[in-house]
Length: 232
Image 1 (tube, one colour):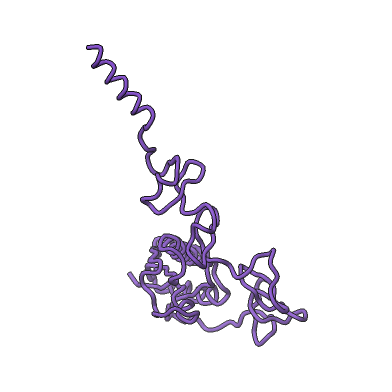
Image 2: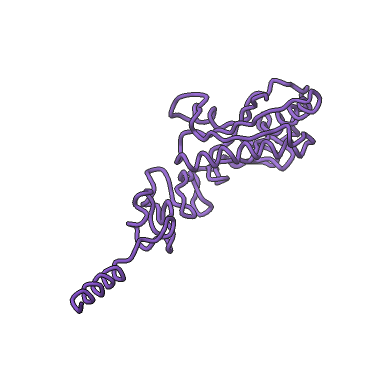
């Protein structure tokens, strides 16, 4: 009996020393997160702790691997360019001149090198896809102009749509899925703010899974950063 008691005590000591691994996403070491391809950061499994945990072309931001920006406020862009939204863009040389819409005040856009009010065009109900800048879900001036027309058409004809969000191939599948959902939600919010009934608009995100154009260049990526209108 005494021998049996000693064995039980030793077994209990081994369990106490080794213990059971904490349940995901909690962790004690990187080994607890290895199965998910993650690392242990302050007791929780995260996608990254430093830039070294991300693939080339990506950096670690808030423990998530995101595309590396072209520039930051702390870096200097070449020539007369300045850093805006992670990109180096030409800085307007004179007041009222511009190279992109970012150089113009709110409510204006860049037209032939000068900032001016958007051109009012006749409403068109073609419902073509609206596109987004790299790594952005905020609407461009071109997108808002199109959505203003679309809102009139939807309200007039009582149309119903599923807004399908998409992203280009850069970034992880998880990141692009969330980004595409945010793009669809951004379009829906803008249309609802214009008076479109919320029940007329559903949203879904497909990430990088349904490219409009196949290719690994800026032309293809720009075409794939979009929200499409699918009638219900």
